[in-house]
Image 1 (spheres, rainbow, N blue to C red):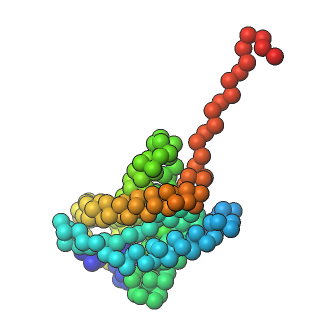
Image 2 (cartoon, helix red, strand yellow):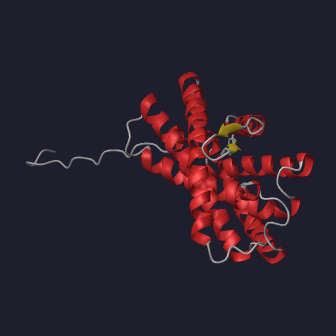
Image 3 (tube, rainbow, N blue to C red):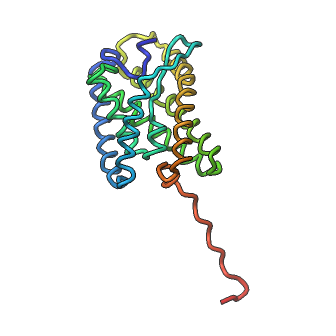
Length: 238
């Protein structure tokens, strides 16, 4: 099960695939920098630093998944997307991954590209798309925000896991004997359970911030309800 960790270790994927996803990660992060600069202001800039530090700290805490005999930890894509938006959020997660790989050896340095694509880009993007949908459907109450944070956190983990399955199909170093469906099922099942923990942490954190400072929750500011259409005048009223 160690080889199925989303912090991919060196040697799990072959060189060409790792290099290709490193290029994808570089392009994606460049876009995030360009788009994120539009969002940065006196409120968002310090919040981004706090979010990155919080994700880094909480990732050190593992919670056991007894049914799968593994443990999981916060990935942070949904949390970052809720609090600082998709562009800056992806950058926050990427910075955490780079520090972990270079300083703590958590995830191979040669696998930084695939790890960033899965966790920082794919996980954050999937979370924010779902956030944008749910906040237009659910009421903007503490309960609605909590549900949105939980569901987006859970889905972001499974999306990142499926990104790894695609990468392994393209360049996994061990022969699965054509059993890609088995790998996908194992990854989905295990990370669905990890996603529950991710959702709980994300929901608790976002609900706490929103209760104290709702203006610091990026999703609430950026995803405003659509304004009602103007009612046309009738009956010759001037």
